[in-house]
Image 1 (cartoon, rainbow, N blue to C red):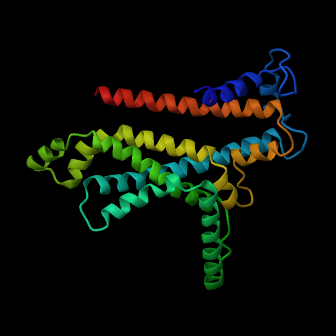
Image 2: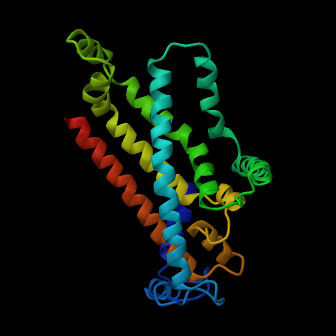
Image 3: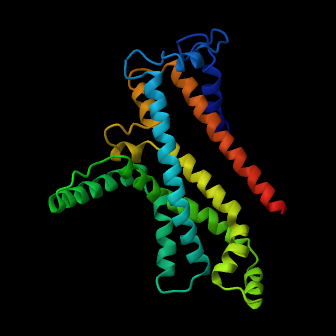
Length: 264
């Protein structure tokens, strides 16, 4: 646990260090947080507050859209595996876990090759100017997030009493009525948790984004990595701490909502 939490604690502590040296403590200050919003982020012009906020906006857009799409597809996959009986179900069940164990670099490169071939075919056949951009990033994030959402929602389905659905059918409800009135409220905490997980993973992702981004689609993770290429500055510590706080807030909200739903 020390190796898990100590680097995070040091990151937060040294984001308040009154020294540009990242390994020497010289007192407490909040200057670096002020620098982030006062256009003093790095020594290069490409590291400005305006560009940082633009990267934040790009990250939020990609994370929200990719999270929603992945949640919808992942929920359908979870329902199919938990309730369906069809040929190939076990194969689909096994394929579900592959994105969880494939290295990010493999996913990023394979998606980049797929888009390169697809764009070449589309542009030659239809004469379009399809290229890398937000669409390719979102598709890449959806691909690796579907499995995470499906696993979370499926776990919620496993704890659901199947007799509730059977009782609804016995009382004359059809499939849609049973789903929206019985199943959906029961798995809603899992769906919300799945979306928050997908949102957080998408917000944090660098590798898949790096291989599939285009002009004007710089996300916060790519922006921060670009800063790290020059040097590790206190502003990077402060920006990373703010990202940590945002992720923690999302986790707390998720746990709180699940707790409220479980009491109903």
